[in-house]
Length: 167
Image (tube, rainbow, N blue to C red; front, side, top):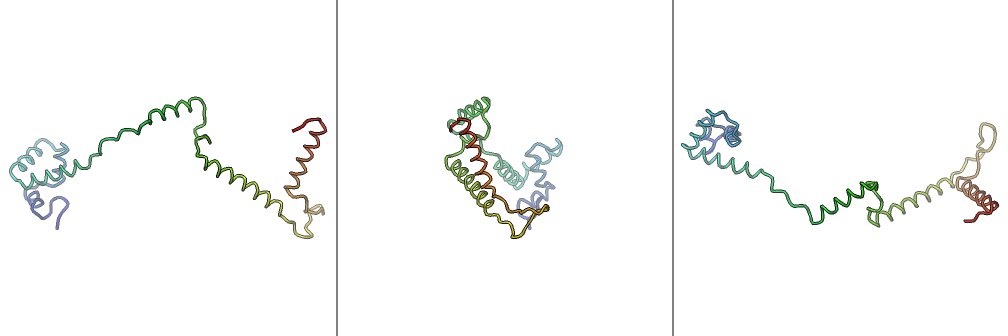
């Protein structure tokens, strides 16, 4: 059975016998030990090859945790960033439609048109129950929204034609 700070096995036993734990070996690697304890552990590492092997293994594992060097930016990255910064400084909105691919713009237009058509269809199909009446006794059945819009636009057209304007 292997313990966290030096269980059984050749290197664990050597560290346990010498009173040196893995934590202390890691602190030695990080130079976090007081001077006296550091000297004691360094002397034990020099005397016992098992402890030296354990220290070397811990050092290898620790160094393997280092991040790889940063990758260089892709070609043209600086120019794209500068162009975008200039566009933002010129007052262009951050999320302009012109940055969206054509298929995204076409899809948005299609969804908008479908929503308008569905809304017109739903409002034109609303039926009032037979015999329903308002509080004043008048019938609730009236023109649909589509009929109201058509009437409004035709009245505006008639008024425009009468004023002598044309489209």
